Amino acid sequence: MSGPDSGDERSDDSGEPRRHDPSEAPLDGTDEPARGSRSANDGRPRNGVGTENEESVVQRSGSGSESDDVSIEDDGIVRWFFGTNDESVVLVRDILSSVAIVAVIGLLLFGISGVWPPLVAVESGSMEPNMEVGDLIFVVADDRFVGDDSTGDTGVVTHEDGEDHEKFGKAGDVVVFEPNGQAHQTPVIHRAHFWVEEGENWVDNRAEPEYVDGASCDQLQTCPAAHDGFITKGDANPYYDQYQRGGANTDVVQPGWITGKASFRVPWLGYVRLTFDSILGGMLAPQPGLETVAGTVGTETPVSSAGAVGASVGAAGVAAAGTGAAMAAGRRRRR
Image 1: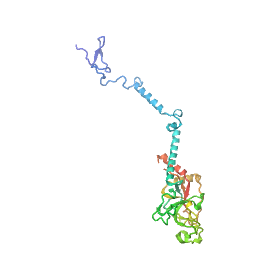
Image 2: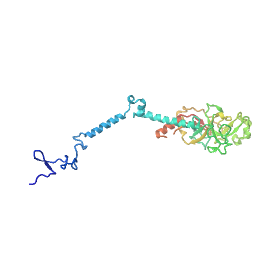
Image 3: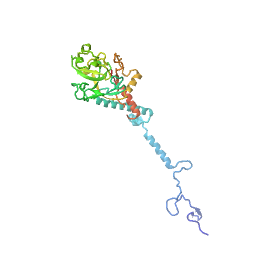
Image 4: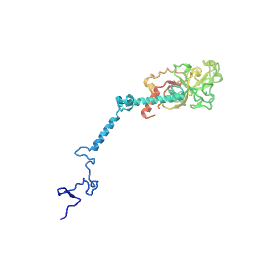
């Protein structure tokens, strides 16, 4: 009769054979458990209770979550404000960041243009097709980006002298000015056609006859010129602004009445400001009533100015920047 298999059973101290437990060390002296066996702490729960390793992981995870929380008492109000995940505080942070973006963009535009506000939104069509309703126009000071053959020390190149200086589809600068130098009136944005000297008979000697409807100097209140300045006109208007039925209905434009020069346009963005004006009924920046002049109905072009933006750091930032741009603006108009 053969003895017990050494791989299956072994004797205890009493001499009685017993079955070998595979979870115990192998009989050959190695420390590895038998193939296919599981240790007592192999990660599986016993009687529905997690293992010791699992419990320690949960404890560490919980303590890490608590350490990420911030409080005013422990961290101070500044660190708490920027670190908390409270929804109301996050909303305030988003609004403030959008306002900060608008402010930075506005300061950059002001640094480039030298005027405030640096943008104007076109409301009607006297400069069409070179400026359209809803365009946003970037404006610079008249002493910046001066072209060749500018008039005196004004920095403005006229249509008459601007053969090599084209702006918005035609020769010469487009200027923003206060009609008759009256700051309470909405400024106008039109092209400077030529310069006249005080006492000059500009109608008979310089003007295009069709732009004064064939009138002579003695038929115009603005001729002879009461002072040095520019004769101006909207590109789509039939007459000079200095003609009685001209769009802006202004005297010869003195250099001191000019608040800037149009530099370039961005289509459609001006509608942001125009929409706010229509919703709020002009409360943002009330506009004087526009005089309807026979022969020029529909050609008077108001414009509203808008501090920029809009402009792009995610959808919320763009929207806030565009809104802030519209709110920060003054107004301009083209007649």
